[in-house]
Image 1: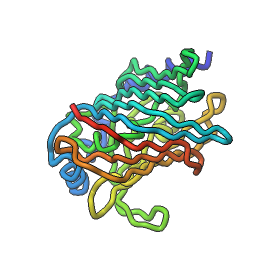
Image 2 (image 1 turned 45 degrees about the vertical axis):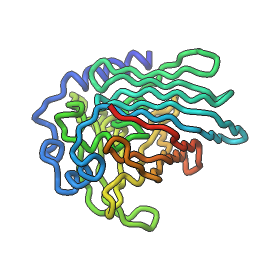
Image 3 (image 1 turned 30 degrees about the vertical axis):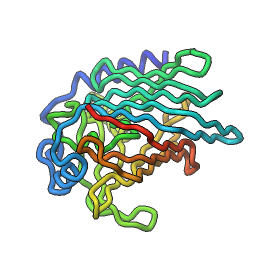
Image 4 (image 1 turned 180 degrees about the vertical axis):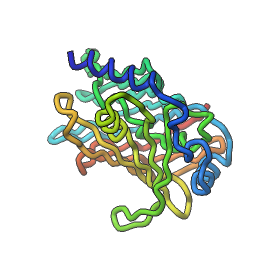
Length: 252
């Protein structure tokens, strides 16, 4: 029942989207957005990022190492394959539209639906640079706001927020869905590259409980003219869960 209700809400909110509600910042990039776009790709369009990495996973007493294959697409779809022994998993998210679905497959090959707001995260957690491109290259539902200069962990960054521009009859629930989809990206004011991002995930049985996720990017290298991070660390509830050291990267 919970999945059916979410699917109906997701379909309603996506299909009642109106282009007129899109924020101006998603249509007319701010100066900082243009600088970030130039820093990431010098204006070069690209539709996908592919990463191969060694991976280390830590969760409580569980520690596993292995490899990872990750793909992010400009339409919002992703494919993440983690070969990490007992915690191996594949996560698939389809493009950002009214038919979006999200699933994960465990190490035993059993498929699970990703429900509720965990399927609404606005952009892939491992590739924010892909979404510095002009809005015409990105999903129509994706909106960007320029939040200006902020202080994060004692350092100064420029924050851009990415969210799904949803519209529904129930203003309160729609506002909550938009908030839960939001990803805040913190850009280095000197390099104009993404330094970190933050968003929330939620337990399967409690959408109201926010679990903070923070992803840190470093060791940038140019790949076919696009700057990509070669070290990615994902913290869940302020504890390092996954570290990726990229060994190969490509763009499409």
